[in-house]
Image 1 (cartoon, rainbow, N blue to C red):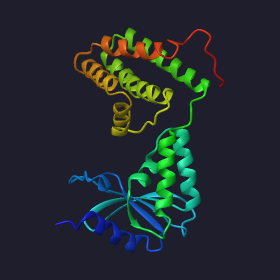
Image 2 (cartoon, rainbow, N blue to C red):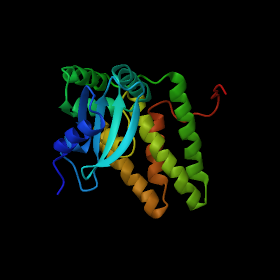
Image 3 (cartoon, one colour):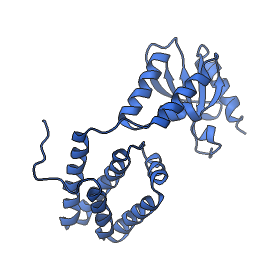
Length: 234
């Protein structure tokens, strides 16, 4: 039988990062959502480390993913999260369980919470136009291709970038995989459910009309399709 996750995390730190200053048990381990396939995500602040890195381990019958920073590189990671719109590290710190503390863990969590509250950096007009152009181009492909296999790849690409566009154009965080879905659901539950349903119809039947109609509405809300006059630096 596995030892409890908090005990395993503390033993892991003592074995692999004995000189670290602060550590947070994050992810499903912090949310109480562990399954038999879960790993333990740990954010580690260690001033003996000159570079930040991610490293995987297997010990104490658990898989561990360690995200290792010093204080300067952690601050940089927070700022990169704001620019990219993906709040993985701030969220892990804000929601994580403190498993080692030199007295500064609560302060770090406070900064992380503030980043999450403030949201990602605002897209430039150039970035928004670039995304509109890309969606317009892919939508044309979705509506005109006759090869269903090609349309599947177009549909997958559209599904991701339209989700990102809806969130970032409205000042919200995005994410990878399940976190993109969770972000979209949190932003607009009705749209998210209709969008997923339209994509499922496309994948099951090949009928792209419901998906195309929804994407057209997204574009209309942000200036419509974009082709004529679009210009970008190469």
